[in-house]
Length: 393
Image (tube, rainbow, N blue to C red):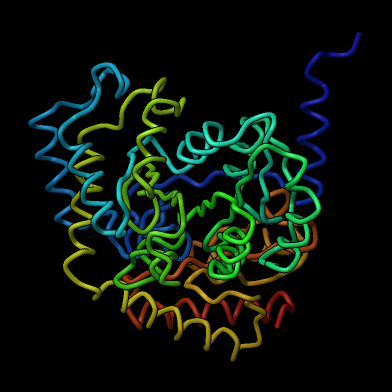
């Protein structure tokens, strides 16, 4: 009789053969410009710490003070006994920062998408979703049980065609897109998407996980970038990237956010975010509200690194944000490139299928404001050396 777990062993062997098996690296320091990974000091070109806030003294102090005041955990869901004064203060500050009517604080960006979508659409409704939307959007759509119609990536004309073809068959509809696409670094044409939605009476939702702290005035996000305040219905975000902490947010029209407080399952059925994380996220919003310095430095670093990488002969795809994909094609090549970079004290992980399409494997470089020009030059030198060694450039 075959072992009941043979299917797992066979699948793992196939992943290893294809260069798709994920090897976890272990972090033993804060995610600064240089960090300790698998026991060695390496240049951090990998984490989502866009602004260097993850170990910012102001955030660390806020977390310590919250621990002393509130303890380590709320020990309840927010709708019963878990809503702290910090949670409500953070929601007010985020709404003010983003220029929206209200905001709801949940456990993560992934939870935010699963919280927001199912209450807004159901079995008799339709979702129009960008082909490259994040897995958390896809999962949120599936949980809603609405019909999912995929439109071509960042193609408002195809969106319009799909809406005209399908919307009449359903009770109501919503169009959902990532703002910044995390693997390619390109930006959704939010103004064109809004125009289509407005013509056809669709609700609108954007996942701004990689736009907050990056796009817009002082990092206020993609809606600010396009000047669509008060027009987009729902903005989903996370505190785990540019803000350097953890937690998710659903921001937008008050009528929608109030409704989600009654209906969003992750909000109603999962423990509230800790006081320490909430206080640190609040401090991050305050830091960004006071100055554009970190965001300006992030973009200066991104422009420099991208220009130099292109000069070396690397293909950095279609990115127009600090996300810098180094396109390598095959997953085995990308994994070997990442291993060789690590040998040279560079931390930059390979990404392959199913995170990206087959044949589109890459090293995804995440530029940060915390990197000095010396750091960037060191990274460029090592990328150039490994690229020549492996015949990529």
